[in-house]
Image (cartoon, each protein chain N blue to C red):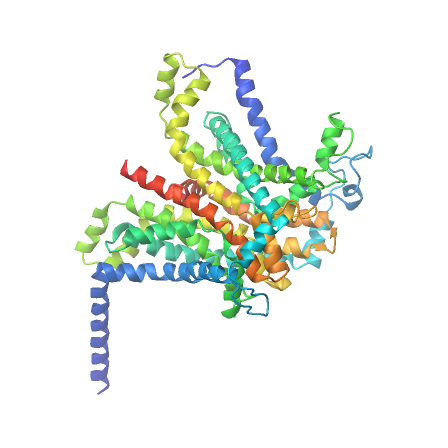
Length: 312
Length: 283
């Protein structure tokens, strides 16, 4: 008896295995099964919260109170809020200047690293460190370097005879925004440099030599040979950088916390202060949604550009 | 070869290179000096004549000891490591499967899905943290490591999928077809033939995902409430500043020790990391 049941069980198992195998041969079913885990996580933790953010932004929800539908009141309130206006301006300023500096310095660094020199590998590897080290931790080092009383930068500038009184690195709003641009540039420049370097390495040196034989100087060789060939990579890197800089949070949170007197908030840090700090979830969600049109435009540009590249 | 004069090489190569090195690495040097500097020397203002900010004469371990003994820093380090490893593994598995499906299988909507996954890659965490905190609470995951282990993959999966999809496309189809003729199932051929060949790509995606998880801040800040659940970045920000007082020695020791694991992983796999980084933007 026992032997018989064991045999049927084995037979059943074999049948189930073969049915699974057959299902596995069906491309559509296999594709669905393989895509399911990733798609479920992305749907649950990106698509669903995004829809919720839209809903939140239209209600007066706060911590411990479901609130009610208020239409566009949260958005209208944000547009009238002088701190938010400042935060929006700061975000544009921060993104614009930091991206310009990262591109210019990153390109320069990439051109330098593309040459042959001793210790190339270790220097190239160490250049990426600012990008690897958690932003919060390195931003603390910068905050300490900007410290009003103990600043090493003031010490260096003072002893070099450049200044006679200390510079108000983080204690004045204008200065603090430029400091944030500086730190963001420091952190993001290696990303530009290494990605552009990868692009540079695909450009044949023959092109440069041919241009040099035709009498082009270094600047012309860069402008007429390197830059056009590098443009596709450059655009993609800029898009990524703009998205990350525009939605940045950690750097300002650590460096200034939005101060002094709310003058250095970015959209994300102000949304955090309202949504989490004050518990006004609806208003906070509306504030962070102000990032969306800009991000959407950038992504749209990127997708169109990719399509054109594929078509070409 | 283009020939260059000596002074030109100095002006256009050595000097800028030196400036870049100082600019890039000085903050880390400063972190390290501060971490080992005694308090008496630390709080000397920049105008005092005996201030020696650029080096220290009496290095001390008091800040490191204080950090390891009086704060939960070792626990944060462990949390961060665990969360980074688990979310990297989850993302790699999802990314390998999805990447394979998008690269090799023909089905309706594959183009659309590929684009949709790419778009989620570009959605920043700061757009979603408020409703996501609500969802995490509803799922009863708040203040547990799972809150981060499940949400970090949202920014890792799209990247892993795209990187691996590109990698799978470079593997010749014949390799798989041979295995299938020998009787392997489609799934079996993927696991036993394609994945082993793709190990360099998987390693690149994994290293890059690990450093991204180690760096994440806003989700950890919002979802984790109690001190012993925090990750290194959040713990350093919220627990090492008491009231308005910054304990700079301990802060810098924390920043230094919190950077070491990720820097070590990076230094062992620089080439893979660079491949991941440059691949991440190829799209």
